[in-house]
Every structure is written in C-alpha cells, then in structure tokens.
Length: 446
Ligand code: ADP
Ligand code: MG
Image (tube, rainbow, N blue to C red; front, side, top):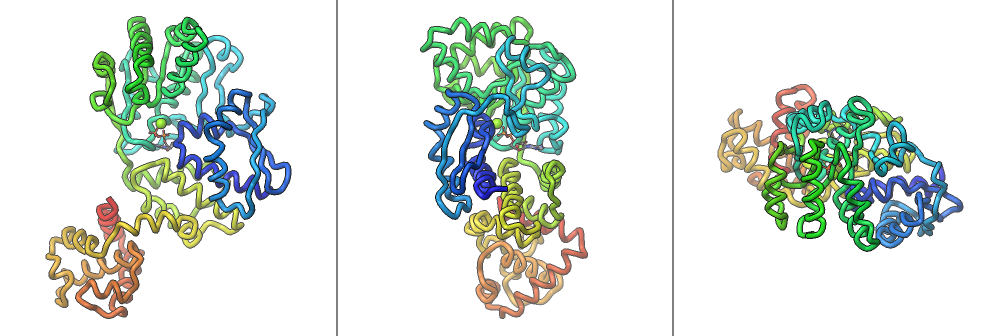
C-alpha cells in the first residue's frame, strides 16, 4: 500500500476524533483516496458541491491531520471530482433500490455498519435498544416520537440508523424513510429559502412515512428551522407517521428550544443511553475486531477498554489507532505496541491522577484509614490494600519507584517494586482481585 494512503488511513482516525462522526460520515468518509505520486494525495468527492464544501470547510483540518499522523514529508492535497459509480464499501450506502429511492424522496444515506446486528447491547443501552427495535418493528404504532438522548459517542446515531435499516430491509421496504442530521435539515432549509424552493422542501419532508432527525438540539436557537420543523412535525404526527429524534440531552434541557417543541418531544417516549460498563466496552471492541482482518490479543482489548471509559467513538478510535500503528510499523499488535500507539492518551490520563487520590480511593474501598495505609503497620488487612495502592500508583502515574515510596511514609523503592510485582502476579491468578482492581481503577479515573 502506498505510504500516502497509509497516512490517509491514520489521518481519518484523527479526523473522526476531531470532527465527530456526523461530520466525518457526511463529508470525509465519502472521499475516495488516490495516490498519484509520492507525497501527494488526491481525494475524490462525489460532486462539485461536495468538493467545494470540503475545500471550504475541511481542507485545513484534513491537512493538519495528515501532518500530525506520521507523514514524514509534507503531503500535497488535491481535491477532485470523482466518477459517481466508484462507490466503495466504505462509502455510505443506499439500501434496497437506490434509483427508485432517489427519485421518490431524496436519498437515504445510511452507514451500512450501523445495524442492530452490529450493536452490542449492555445495561447502559438496553432500554434505548429495546425501544428502537420496537419502533422499527411497528413504525408509528409503538412510540411516537421516539426520542433518544445521551452524551456524544454513546451510539445514538448507530441506534437510529439501525431503525432505518431494519424498516427498509425487514418491515416496510416501500415506506418513505428519511434519515438526516439536523444540521443538514437546517442547511437544506436555508438553501431552499435562498432559492425560493421551500415548497419542494416541504413536499419532501411532509410526505414521509418515517422521519429521523439526528442531533435535533442543533436547531436550538434557529428560529426558521424550529418553525419549519414544528409544522413538519404536526403534519407527520397527525398523519400517524413515525418521527425519531436524537439529542445530546433530554428535551427540557435543550436551551433555546421553543416550548411547543419541547412539549411535543415529550408526547412519545424519551429514553437515554449511558456510558458502557467494562464488559460492554470489551464486547464492543471484540465486535469491531470481528470485521477487521487482524487479530488483537485479549490483553490489548482489556488495556484499551480500561483506558477509555465514557465515549464509544473514542474507544473505537483508540483501537483504530492501534491497528493503524501496527500497519505503519509493520509489526503485530501486542500490548507494548498498543501502549506505544496510545502514549499520548496514556499521558493525558496520567496527568490528572495523583498518588494521594489513589490512596484515598483504595483506603475507602477497603474500609481502612488513610493513615494506616501509609503507615508501617503490617496487619494483613492493611498490607494488601497498601500493595494495591502502590501497584496502581506505578501503573497510573508517571512517578518513579522512589517517588512513590515517599508517598507511603518514605518506603524504599525495592518495597514498591516488590509490591508491584507481587500484585501483578496475583492479578493473573486471582479473578476476584482482578475485578476489584478494575472497579478501583474506574473510580480513580472518573
Ligand atoms: P452518538 O451518535 O451517540 O454520538 P454514535 O452512534 O456515532 O454515537 O456512536 C459512536 C461510535 O460507537 C460508532 O462507530 C458506533 O458504531 C459505535 N457504537 C456505539 N454504541 C455501540 C454499541 N452498543 N455497539 C457497537 N458499536 C457501538
Ligand atoms: Mg450522533
């Protein structure tokens, strides 16, 4: 694979982090990379509008990511218009019958990966998943509107696109479905107003069977969008059509949202998604690896799942970084390689963690006093927590062994090393301890 294409793959992971999935999926993923010469990269956009938009809004971000993602020499970037039939699997796909779909109601752009089959269900998203599935099984009969909320990167877009896939492929192939990021809805409206084509805009949105607007909080503070959406909502709702919305917070907490919309959003069902627990994070990583032509050892999976706790996009991003790093370095994926690939992230996390804090968390977990933990007493019920605290200090901070010893009443660095090695060995044999340790780690990180 040419070097520039490798760099582009890395840069995409950075861009996804930087721009967020919606923007990434909309504007970056459809670009097709070609390498014509060394140190030059050509990205093909599907049409002129697309190319100009990316040129205007995302060129600096793309260039910056190329620069920061290991390019040895500066890469010259060219944007071109590609031939439309060159659709790659990476590209957002159109399901069932593309031509007809396109004619009848504008196209349904979905990420082919965002299906129920690819969605890992855990305690954090069980409810949201169940309601989405129920809605997909009987649109406009179960919950209307269905409102999914939660912070960024927790699977809202994935879930609501799964509903679209499910309806399209299993329930009602000829239903008119539209999935749209709210940002696009707003841009389209502005465009329609400028070009005096609001009638067509209304025709499109008010004749749907299923309208899915992602990140609806985006229309907060935008009066013409809210006005237009209010009428769209009423028309669809009165005609018993399904409306599905997602947002980063519950309706009542969206500032600058008209009261009449807030109340309508509450007519159906609002359900949240929460950050995933460790098991779910591990399962999500494993699911993602299933689709990749690489093998990733369990200790690497646990390492990544232990490092990133509250955002699944970041969790996947970290995995992608490890895979890309192994590709660049042409080395197999090991724990050491993963640590190297994610060293910035490790540093970031470590910066905020102090030995003091670790000691307090451990003391609390074991119900002993901070004073005892640091003192010289050798009771069995104190020695273990003390060793654990030393182990965690070594793992979770950048301090040296003598420095850590100082925090424990001036213990020798060999004592710290002994504790560290001892606990490390215990963790391999003792599942209960491992679980407990994971719990403490989580508390410390959060
Ligand atoms: P949000 O819309 O809430 O910001 P996304 O739906 O974009 O989050 O999810 C971010 C990433 O995490 C996506 O790549 C998505 O596929 C993945 N993801 C989120 N939740 C799950 C899950 N439960 N199982 C598998 N992948 C998930
Ligand atoms: Mg989203």
